[in-house]
Amino acid sequence: MRSSLLMTWALSAALLAASCTNDGIVEPSPNNAEANSITFTIRTPAGEKVSYSRADEIHDLPEYAIKTLRLYEYEVITGEDGSKKTSFCRLMKYPTGNGTEVFDITNNGNGSYAFSIVIPASYEGKTYTYRLVANDIPASPAAGSTVEDFRNGLYASVVLADNVVTTDEEGNETSAPTTASALADPDKGIAMSGCATFEGSEEIKIGTTTTCEVELTRVVSRVDIRYQTPNLVLTNIQLMGAPKKGYIFPQVANDGSEAPYIPSVLNSDCITMAFDKARLPEGYLKNQEGKDTEVINKAFYMYERSNYDGNYAYVHLEYDVLADDGTEEGAKYSGELDVPFRSTTADGEGNFNYINAVRNHLYTIVLGNGTDPVAGKVTAKLIVDDWNLIEIDEHITD
Image 1 (spheres, rainbow, N blue to C red):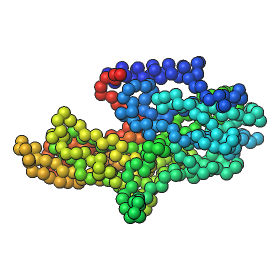
Image 2 (image 1 turned 120 degrees about the vertical axis):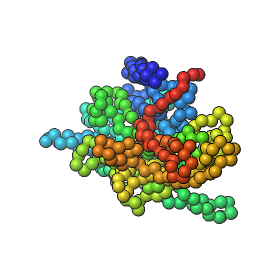
Image 3 (image 1 turned 135 degrees about the horizontal axis):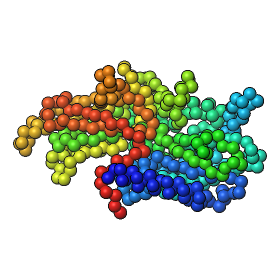
């Protein structure tokens, strides 16, 4: 089933790409569709390449919708010795801006968007590079500043706090730990970033193309929890060591390595995030007719961070488990379990290596062995996936 689905998706994606190139699924608004313009086609990490009826059941719209969009334009200047430098030129915005700096976007459905910008005649023959930020509004770069300045110093605007203080109508203050919703506000969406490319290059020479492609990537990762144990129930969930802030763009190592660089985080720059108790599973699966799996989607979102011995993120779980002794009300045991960002499978040398929390990845904690009623015996497995992938165990129907 999965093989046939992948083949279907691949074929559909190929047909879609052909449609973009030959016929153009993009119809930018008339005020932007100038002859001297560039059209950007955007793919957000919606998780699917073709539309089907169950899409929003798997990925909520706020996880891939564009609410706001910023386009940062840099000229690429080549020196006589062949060296290159970049210089910030202009900022363009959606949905609001001043004068010619504002543009419209077209929602092509299925996590795909498009827009066009006017290119001044003076740009002809010059080379530019474009950085895009969705669902976040960072400060504008200084005129003439470089892409490196922008990328390496730009944090997401949401900085997490140890506790969120709210005030009611009577002026009474209530303090509660930060929850996952802080990084995924339905009205603001999840921050994403990307770079425009043409034929695989980030350097766009004006006059050689009228279209560019953009793959946006979420700046956060997501944690889910799943179990199929009939007599297990979670009573408390916390994410320990969550970074207070994160970069909008992926970082580059100082040694020039092309491998992804995941910043380290000081313990003092981390907080404990709480899971909303109102969303905890209700009771045991054994008491819920027809239910054989408990899934807590979107338990947490977190900024990326490196994990290593002595400094790592982990999920703290508290649970109750009923003795499976065949009686209606068996003995109940309570326990705690910490699940670090660490491999649950040993490598060739018998080591259980730590796993970095990488942007746009999905980390699923699978709990099991609840039939053993001894507290502390509940086991956990950590599964790491690219967040863009979807695993479907049933036929897709209308």
